[in-house]
Image (cartoon, rainbow, N blue to C red; front, side):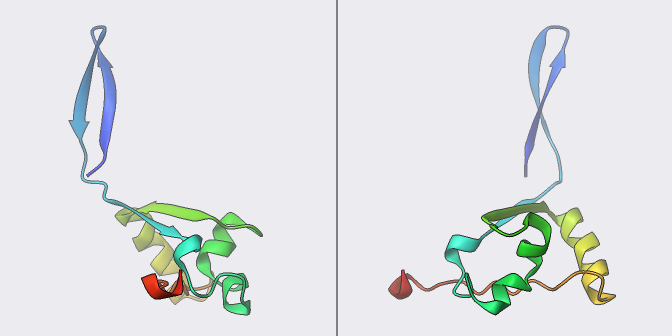
Length: 85
């Protein structure tokens, strides 16, 4: 869960939210620099030099709606194994 800091009467308080964040790092993808990379969701969102995409679960639901309708490319991330690093 992510934590949001809020000011209350001059003090900070920590509120828990239900937003689960996850990230997709292009550095960990075996398809980085390939034609699949150019046609991946991460490249579509971040542009020519993608690095890392961070989304909440809610963001991912919205993206899924767009990809199912063909309005955005799908995620083509494939995790690089430790032997390939």
